[in-house]
Image 1 (tube, one colour):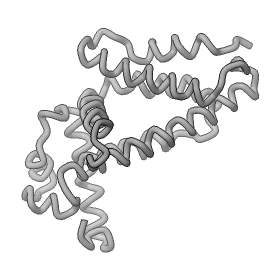
Image 2 (cartoon, helix red, strand yellow; image 1 turned 180 degrees about the vertical axis):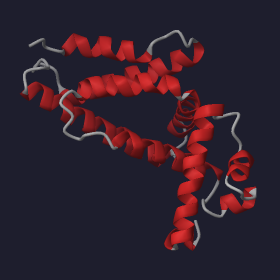
Image 3 (cartoon, one colour; image 1 turned 90 degrees about the vertical axis):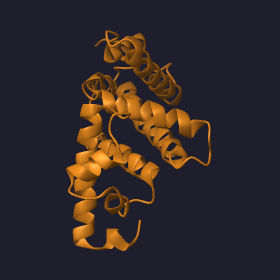
Image 4 (cartoon, rainbow, N blue to C red; image 1 turned 90 degrees about the horizontal axis):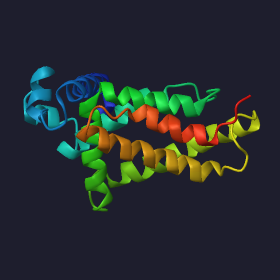
Length: 192
């Protein structure tokens, strides 16, 4: 990105682009939303829109980062982070285009260390594991999660279940992603 990010108008326009793109992808789908569609929705040409990003892939990663910021705005001291995680996964059924985008880009980035989204996903998985594990430790401290459960391992398992359920859900929308994540959480939860 050029010096666009240093000027208030450039910062505001980039934010508008990302908000609009997030809504378009969530509504229409990843494959059905083009850079041209996003540019038209914010009153720019395709070249004008890409002035705000290094590349088309940089735009897609920025959309995912924007979605992450919205999701991360939740209470960091959430009393039941496992339930919140399941609710977040359940919410994904309302934004199928973002699920498609996440699955497509994560698969492409996982197999290619040079992919523009590779570092984003590597950092995202590490940050998510740490956040979920911290919440699971709080649940253990309050007696709501079995202390025999390793929080880091269980965080990885929950993320694997959620990613896998998202893929299954894309093939069969009757699969309740959140219910499957909740079923795994229930295996380790202690009833008070």
